[in-house]
Length: 326
Image (cartoon, rainbow, N blue to C red; front, side, top):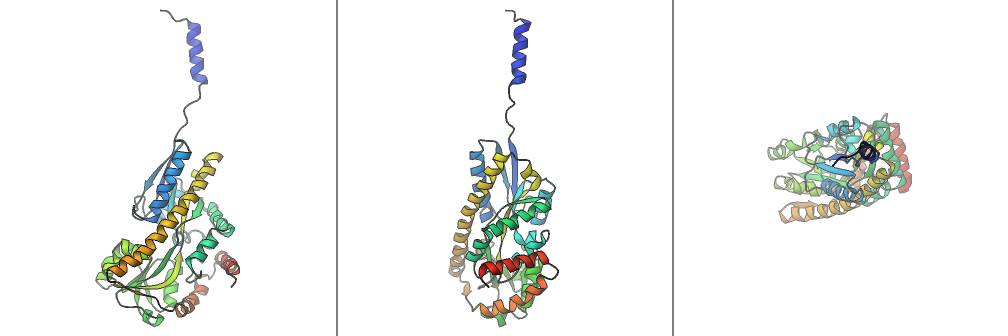
């Protein structure tokens, strides 16, 4: 059977006019914690929500456990557009965004609930918007890790902190806080801490109760003191280039899904933190609950040093204090 040239022309024209199938947007998200962590809970929930609601227009891949490098490397990868997004600690971001140094002040908040109230308010959204100037885009503040002291010897008062060699996060807010408390703050890679405690290279570390148990520090540090010096923030961050490359409808979808996923992750983290204390106590760890007023009084002496030459951070401190009625 012969097909006329006119029919072939019509068919060819129809093929040209037909819309091309929508291309799937690949979204790779990373974090440094385990695949059982609240970070993973947030990103798993986000993946489910986004893939379902976008009808396949976005496909999310999650890389846990530092597969994309440490947080500093992940942030750099986002800023250059290599990585779409990540869950990172606010303390890591403070090396890039000066205003974020306020979030590492010891005893900044009266309690974790107060930290959530502030960071989920319009003021928190304003702080997220600061990231855009650094080639990043903030979707929301995530779980807050209430960090206390796990130690080989008991810490029942601020006097027991004197001379204690303690592993801390390598940021001014943590180093100076523990200097003010009279310890010997010792930054070191997280992966080295277990053996350092075992060999008494350090006497203690500051850590949240869920991580204390999850990473088995309760096997070598038999005391856990609820000092609650830092309400350590976490942030769901995207590459600004990735964010700006999304159509407006997908931006709205991604933002809404992120906030829902964060709520799920916060609830999971609160359960893990409470369970961590129960598990540690059941394993024979002594849980100490000292009067925190002397700890706060000494630690807050570090604020002036931490905020020196940091006007952006000092600006937010004043606003936080006004919000808290101090």
